[in-house]
Image 1 (cartoon, rainbow, N blue to C red):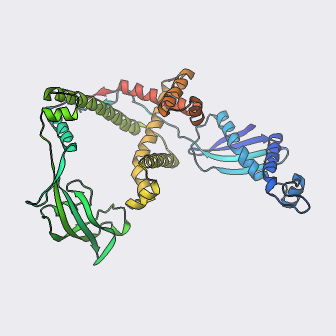
Image 2 (cartoon, helix red, strand yellow):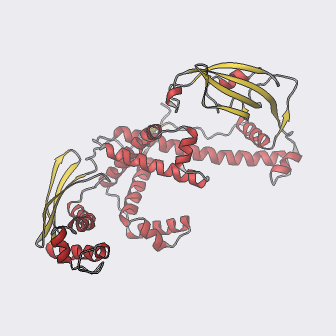
Image 3 (cartoon, one colour):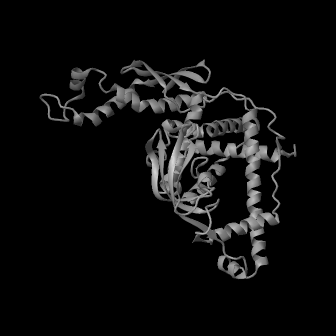
Length: 428
């Protein structure tokens, strides 16, 4: 293979002209013929036995060329990219075949590249510290959560419903005098104040008693997933069957023994404090990383191709779908059940994708500016770490993750560590 030319034709767009030698091209064409001939019927020949020359005479000299070009294109581009050192972005390429015969295959292709990046002042980023102090209020709040997890629901008959109660209701949504799809349910369990329903619904149930039938007026949010209900005023006819409240167990030494390995309240509280301190420390570290990431995205100067954001959105959606599958539901079913559309899902992840792409571009540039190096040993250790994490054979992991991608990830990680170590705390 040979790279004939490489020219930038517009921002983040390069045109490459690549030549594949005629011998390689013809070998690939012949391999395609051998693969496809078994499916071809030619009069006078048994199925799958027609000579290539006969098939080409009947269907044209280039009958197998298109599949051969598809076979050779990825390796040709990989070769050309290695020659140029360009950072290619996954995108739909423009392809033009300038020549295809026994002498040579010449491919002209236009590819999207990562942008030129400029970044300054990435050392000494000011970070506002998050408090890691554990107060008595924090401890009491955590203990209350544990008591709530160990609580029981008791029926309430001597007072109206109030926030934090769980009510059992029938409801029917009415719009313009008719029930609308998805707005009806019987014996539905709803915790008041949870925010599970649209704004105003739960507040309107508060104050009503068991056995009451009543109608409430609410308005759907402007950003509601179902188009015909966005911003629309509706009514809900409601029947309240049951009110239940959580009865929390008394906090004493018997409770402590039931929920922990400790025998005394003081020992239990000390353990709660220690765990809260560790959580707050991790939260503070995450907040520091978030502040630094926001600043790096702000400092980045680059014309980022929109397709990079779209690719990252696809990655985030795939990650979301995988998490759903782990819970036993596929993305399509989830979207149908919740009324979520592709457009809304796309918009949900857009800002996060933009931030992640910008931060990675910034860190890649910092890694170059700081001459950060990743050794073969670093890469091998990362493969071992991934193999342990996935409980998989290391060779299988190497087949799934390219050494180039692993190296890039490690460079980015080292660049982030450098920026974090250079950050300064400020109360402003």
